[in-house]
Image 1 (cartoon, helix red, strand yellow):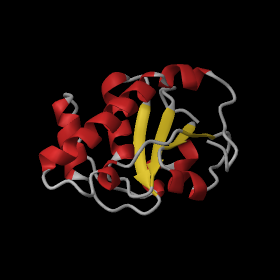
Image 2 (cartoon, rainbow, N blue to C red; image 1 turned 90 degrees about the horizontal axis):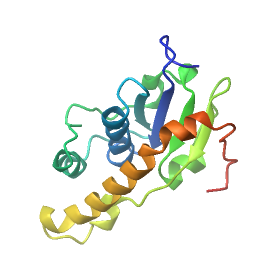
Image 3 (cartoon, helix red, strand yellow; image 1 turned 60 degrees about the horizontal axis):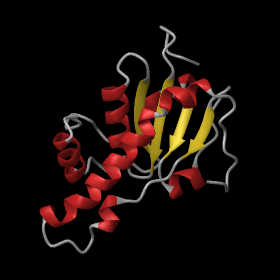
Length: 157
């Protein structure tokens, strides 16, 4: 169900809602203002990742005011499309009411990739790469929303 003004509602779902889903929401709002009503959430919200905020700021997108939140905060009954951006969220994605479509498009986990980095500067290239991959995907959202059906059965990627 679209927003009252007809704008499609999209949820980006990840486990912690700290990095990838936040980047995706930021890109959707930045690239498609007024055309997509974007929200992000986590199956187990754990706070906003500061290096995700820094990487997005480098690209001119401010997500510093975003908050990590549960699915319920995105009004699940109003969603048109749910995009899981990590494997765990895809495997544990709840059922959504009505005609909500679910699509899995996984991205590498920057915090995991950067675990051995000694400094933020050493870690940031991982965040930048994933940020840019998420941007490229989010650029395709209008076409994805126009396509039907785009559901992905559980267990497929």
